[in-house]
Image (cartoon, rainbow, N blue to C red; front, side):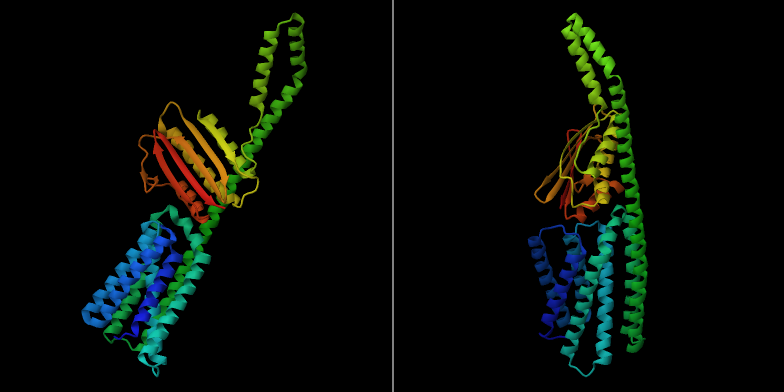
Length: 422
């Protein structure tokens, strides 16, 4: 197929790829940079497509392979997801694109043979673009949030990528049989439709399992929150018992002060009052934040840090109500403090400390957690190398609220900065 009438169709195909990748991937760059890279991609793709159509033969085949490579590189550059997730999303999208392309071209050829070649070409392209855009909307609405749960495991993404690759190889094999005229067009169309339904069924099971796994993870966070609240309640009960004892002993304290006063021993009175004030301060329960969830988490880890001999200091300035789900606060703040505590314990340093600063600034909530760390701790792409499930959970929450997570190490101190747009 050749002719100038194909050029708008090539542009529409490239534009469809850009829109799908924009909604499918986690953005790495600003919108201006994304538009720049998209324009470069569109120019290269349209040039390869046009040249392949014009030349035909093996040149068309190699042009097609070049288009696939360019599209993959473009999707990798535009997304900040892990490489295994990029592979899964790309193979899935390209497999779906190829199946739709073959199916619609066959449909036009079988049932709309009376229309011109140019009209059939654009009918197939427009229908394919509409279906792909609809799929991207459904993915963004129903699947994207659940798939963020799998950020902790590259192995899972490789398994999913293998499933997508098997479907692509299956439809590619059918296409090869068609090229050799081994299968009539009618049976070929049925084969592509069957592959499409099978792919949808398998992916439905995959996404359903991921959704259940996500719900289990959220249930674990609810249990973690209950643990924080229970620790907070225990601290309150201990404080109440201490205050009850202090009130009971008040008469004895007043008698002791009166005896010192009779003898005129002012220094003894001041020392006694100072000691009594210290005892009252130690019995009091510290309130770190007006927000109940944040206060419970900070109180729980203040206790854990104290038991481990780790200095724990907090500066918190956030309102009582936040537009962040409790489950997300637990996943973010709980994992930050858990990792900080483990970092202190594994550092081997004599002086161990955790400092956490939480503040609300405009429409952003900023959490900075500094902790003593081991000399062996290394960063990769501004995150701890070989990131744990906890780091992935923190990162997932930051991405959910269109924020970011950055780590840095300076003078045996690891600093994590999480920013959420709320």
